[in-house]
Amino acid sequence: MIKVRRKVHLLRREHGRLVVADADPRAPAVQPGRIPRVSRLMALAIYFDRLIRVGEVADQSELARLAHVTQPRMTQIMNLNHLAPDIQEQLLFLPLTASGRDRVHERMLRAIVAEPDWAQQRRIWSTVRRRPSDVGDG
Picture 1 (cartoon, rainbow, N blue to C red):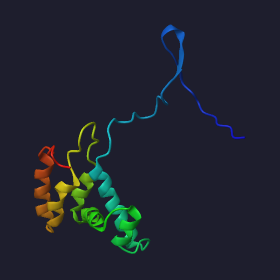
Picture 2: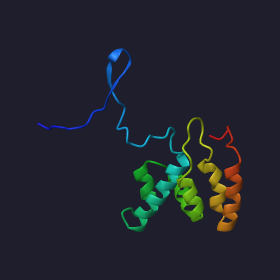
Picture 3: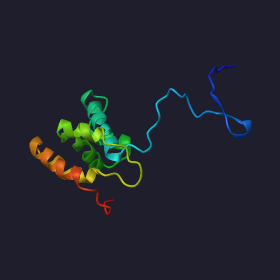
Picture 4: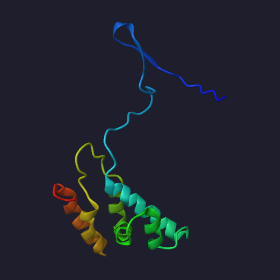
């Protein structure tokens, strides 16, 4: 038999009714929203690159099979590693999306990834970051 000990915070509501408080009052509040998809893809690209470098996975083809995506899609994800380090960092720490579509999509980054010069990447990124996302992107 397993015993679990935990403190429970009770609140007295209207008419003297007791209810269990949501959480520890000292715990930080969880921010509403979700992590943008491109942030998750950037994190995956970094993780996948490490898997290949340490030899846990042979190549991108094997990664594609393991992740159940096509090889071209895996290439698109892995190309995010070609971005300038500061752009990668900004992608990882994009603000949470409260509702609606994400402001930045992987498709918007393809032109930046194709540019080998990091200074030029930064110029393109600054324009992409400022413009509102297109509603028609899919």
